[in-house]
Image (cartoon, rainbow, N blue to C red; front, side):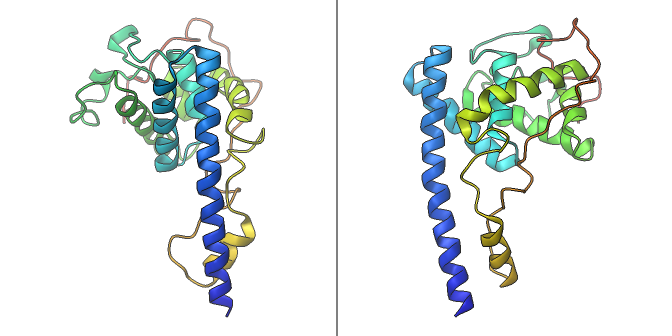
Length: 220
């Protein structure tokens, strides 16, 4: 009976997550249309790409949105120093291996996937320290601080401020599921997608603020 109850709880959690994800998608696309003047179809495409990458690489959607807004202000054909391209200003020369099958970095899906993969790689190299990962991505701790401030702008768009979203299953649902060894248990709200808040004492480097990088000297 307890296993059946757990399955019911898991099913309800997944349904709630699906509904919330759809609502989040609508909120993001509507915000991008109103705030950045994107066409509805383009806003929906970017919103979907952000959600997909966030789920795949365990990154908060608000974090990816913050990076995109700083790097390109959601202009998919944006160009920057050293050939930085697209929404997340990915530098092809610095990530040849990762991008060997990518044909067009101006396409939102491809660009957000690539940028998220790069950030995820930096996270792994930094032992999970997102400040250091963002320093590698953008070139300075000041960049990490700027991203953290921008995350706060997008947090209400994707859910409750200070949380990755309000659609994550409860800890009780996750614990019950794992206790009965059921596959594909959901991640609780206290999982890897939590926000980070860099220290207010992060070093300031005005020369690098706002510059697209995503290509430090030692790429992963």
